[in-house]
Image (cartoon, rainbow, N blue to C red; front, side, top):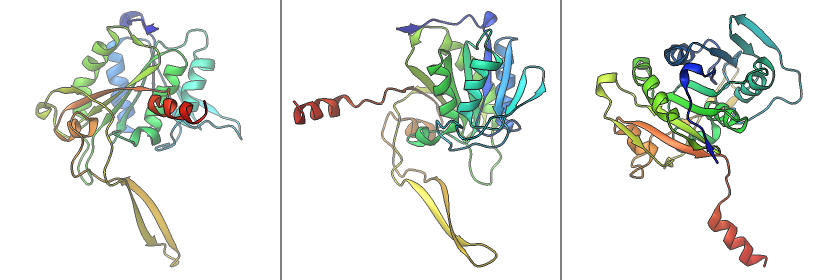
Length: 260
């Protein structure tokens, strides 16, 4: 079945993220959302929840703090935030569109499996809302070019929700690390794969005790053509439809052959 196109003038938008309620990208996304419609609600984690994936808080109560009109902080994960927003805070009229981000750092390739930004959009889609994750590329020791996401974000969202799309998908959008006038178009991409994986940094604390610190994905030497990674490093805005049914069809046929 297809999710119907949205009339943004009459829609309700939920904005969330994984960088926390005070994350700079959340302010950018709020401004983008308010360009689309007046009914915008913010429910975001109280503190940073990067790489929490699609986790729920089950072993302690969640506490929600109202910070202003249509603005709430939750001491939980991005998934908790969307669930509480749709099922409690907005239970009388859940959001039609869930926007997650703008994440400070791209979510490309296997990042999507770890990302709290993607997870929030996944939860929104599971709960029946059209859902889009948005991320802004960054570079170490360089200012984040938020103006790029802010310039193109509203138009990308309008175009995405103007047509019906399958109910079992969410959309992953990445803005490249460059100024707005340097963006080299927009590409519809497959999910890529980083070649070198996650970096681990070894060190010692002030007491001399050793530790390991999990870092970011290394930049790929060469990415698959047509992938989100390749397009991103070419300077394009990337758009990738993601599904939450992870069944591998070829593997299914293989296993049926083993267990006839």
